[in-house]
Structures are given as structure tokens and as C-alpha cells.
Image (cartoon, rainbow, N blue to C red; front, top):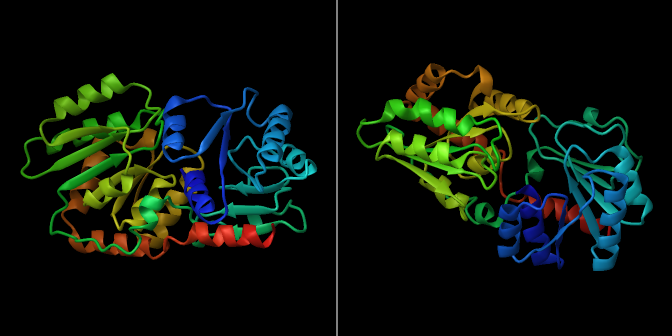
Length: 327
């Protein structure tokens, strides 16, 4: 989704965008196609030498000015192969996973991003670090100045754990929120991402939770859903920045290693509730956190405003400006 945020603005300012993926997932492909993006599938192992050669060949053939890579399998050798082809390269990164960086530009949009994560890089590699470079999609950029009302009690709760949620955290959260069943005025919207692994089970859990719960699949406008919410329960990925932009107070559950520093930094600098790793969060723990935050208007407003101060919606513009200067 952060690649899409960059692609939308690039198309508006500079021209065509081509997405190349080793994954032939129909949900993501359909979303990108609806956005007017060209989508090509690269039938070689992701991050391999063959992948680098094929991707560079596509870029040169399509006349693309830059290749943007986003994934932990894009090693230093992969980056060097791209650069050796004559293409310009931007690497979206979270914690300095590569043994050496050959990219023209590295973007790490996280609060904890620092130069020390990238000691092994080319002398001319430009570092764009921190939330000034958060990449948001059009739907969020358009609403970045939108105000939020904070009620005495948070009644509208959004649950969104990312596109796939292979850990099954969404299901566990829904079951924990069954304690809201029958309480006056509560509404819960549960988002199932395009690659959610066991939709029938989740659908049944939402049905058992009662009238106030609704399952949302194939959501086209997440910003609208976030504008609806008084409180969100989410994973520690890029959704945190989207919720911050929309001024939604958030409870975070960590699903993967790259999310851990994001959740910790958001808790330290914005007061976001960080429950830690998913397998350590009990139903009782989550219920306690929801109850405390839902009834504390002052705390919710402080969390939302502090988080929103990091996200001004102009990150993609800043990144593209740097790319233009190197073109």
C-alpha cells in the first residue's frame, strides 16, 4: 500500500507506473488495476538474480525512470544487479536488513529510523529517514487536515490487522471483543484483508458476536472507515500511519519483527497503547485495554493528536522531489 501511495502521486506528477510482482495474487492485482496501474507478474523467485534481470529488463522496455523495491528479500546483490543494468533504484526499508545498500535512495519512514541502520551503503546513497517521508495513498492525503470529534466514550471500534494476517490475530481480537455484546451503542467493524487465510471462520465469529459487529471485505476506501472509528485495534505496520493521519486513537498488536520497533516508538512518542507480540496478548489483557481507553476521552485525544503530529500527508511529495533531483 505504501508503494501505491508513491505510485499514485508519481503518475500525477511524472507519468506511467508499472507494478511488477512475483506473486500472482488476484486481490492485489485487481486493486492496482482499479487504480489504473499496469501490473505484470514476474515468474521467477522473488529477490533472485533472475528476478533482478527480468525486472530491470521490464523497466528499460517500459521506459520507467526508476525501480522501487519494497521487501526483505531484496539483498545487496539484488540491488547491485539493478544498478549495474543502468536503472535508478529506490529502496523502501524498515530496519537495515541488507548486507550492503547500492540504491540511489533509501526511504525508511519509521519514527526510529536513523543513519546508523545503514553503515554499509554507497557513498552517493541518499537517506530519507523518519515520518517526514511517510507514503500515504490519495484517500488519506485528501483527508490529512480533517478534524476528529472525541466523544466521552468510544463506541465505534475498528479492527484491521493488515492484508493477510497469517497469524490469525483478527479472529482472536473479535473473540475477545465478544464482551461488548449487548452493551449499549457499541459498533465494531472488522476488516478482512484481501489475503485473509480463513474467512469462513472469521465470518462465523463476527456473526456470533451479535448485531453490533460487521465484517468488511474488499474495502475500497479505508480512510472513510477510519473516519468513522472512535478507536482502532491494529497491527504495527503502515496502517498505524494511516490511522495517525486520520487522528484515530489506536491499540497496537505486534505481528512481525518489523512491526516491533514501530509499535514501541509510537507508544513512547505518541502514547499509543502497545500490547506487544500477538501470542502474548490474552483476551483479558485486550479487554482491559479497550475498556480503559474507550472511557478515557482525554487520553484518546492526546494519543490521536500526538500521532497526527508526525504525519502531514506530504511524504510522497518529498520523496518524489528527491527522485526528480536525481533523474
